[in-house]
Image (cartoon, rainbow, N blue to C red; front, side, top):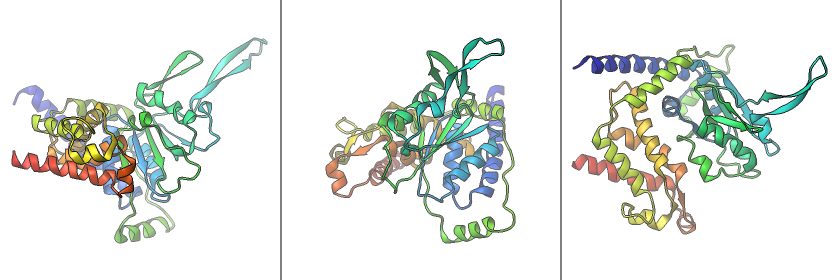
Length: 336
């Protein structure tokens, strides 16, 4: 093993140990949601944004607050409502009068100028306001009054969405959904986990999460993720999975062509290439394998696909379709 490979091996091991500590601290605040914690860490390690979907009361907001404390990122929060305006998120220029009587426009930053933004109930705001996030999420800067204003680095958005209460909501447009690296579904805890939640949160004191990382360490870990090797078999599995989910293409299965209205674009493959590495790092492995691709197929694809009307009427779901595609990829990998 040459010196460069040995140095990278040591860096991966050290970063994996750091991620294990961060995950343990998050688990002190968010109980019984191990997969959710893993996906949230994977999202940040990959340098992306996450869309957390779950009914109220499942600790979505609590998770983002704990994530900010553990990573040392400057956190901000916006509660999305139907009357929220773009300027309420980005900020605006206001006219100020100096002591000498001179007047000048001064830019007042909105809450988006932070390192970790909680966009709470993002689908309650109008499309105009939702789109105010789009440029910041993709370009890492916003334009106000013709002037570019860069976001702090690193910059991540963790948005929450309630899947049940649809009255008074505006579905996110496909272009914005595609900007989220992963969709993180949060389900109900099991009985034992809920018992632990009751005991931990209704006593005189609650456990607090401690800071494990800082922005510089997180940025270094994100650079490491991009340098981690990915085997050709994993790359092929990613391509097979994403391309098989596009209706009307040579790689699509008959079930996909029949049921899917529109499928994932290249960003889905890019998301998988990053997140399989990050998942391997979080789990203390030196390189990703096929199992990582299968585990992240749902979170990376489901918000980038939509079923046609006939398929929805028949009771088909995107989750079941992705599970079938992932199973095919797994069988092909085992046969090889």
